[in-house]
Image 1 (cartoon, protein in one colour):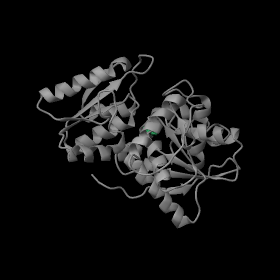
Image 2 (tube, helix red, strand yellow):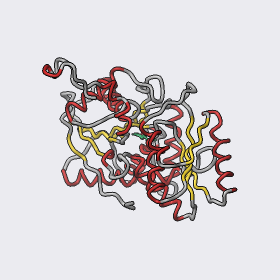
Image 3 (cartoon, protein in one colour):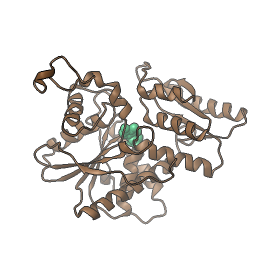
Length: 333
Ligand SMILES: *Cc1c(COP(=O)(O)O)cnc(C)c1O
């Protein structure tokens, strides 16, 4: 397993709204377990765990979680015992996805739980590991999921520097960076990178689940914590966390999102998914339209989630009769 990744590619998209230029950073092509931002997180967690002499890892996330897949895969590669705690959806329902199926195939100890008793479950698993003579590392810190934010944030401070390198080489800079924001960790890292470099541009997190007040507060705390000791000033306005495009919450999507996914596959051959990147791309498009933004250079972070693209392939149904008159009965799958 690489301890350091080469910069991921940034390239221009064929996709256009006729007003702005779009570029994409291909975090989805990071060379491990189908890529994505969680490859960088997981790599940092395993490094931190090793440094602190822990010998088993505990991950947390629901059945769509890309992080669970990557932690499970990395633990398999490294031969480290892995526990995955997984809550049901808000509705109480539990779906299977390509991610959850892969998680189980990596031979982890899988612990289902309810959203209401996450902390009791984490606490129980920690004790269980200890009574088996293991030293457990919970990726999110304490039983309330706090205290270990810095480890993953650091990865995206470094990614911000990759963006700066690209800009230096290509002699232009991006006016906006857009990304799918869930816990806000990735966005916090990019914002810290921006602040540490004294840059002034908007990093817009399109929330895929959380409400603005909560999401923004978490990012603010992350930044305060990460930049403690550095003399960097920042204001609340530095954090743009947009919650207008969450639809009905995590994992919920609409026909517009499906259309965007189909468009980007047809214009650029890039897979997006309805839970994260497809929702964020749609949110970005609507944000630009509503604010009448034009003549800008825009960078979209492709944060991964490729297995989730395949979960929805039958809904995307690429190639309508108009587009492919010779194939009227053939859908993409
Ligand atoms: C986790 C994830 C995100 C969100 O990252 P956060 O740091 O939690 O905000 C975005 N896109 C994909 C594909 C993800 O798996």
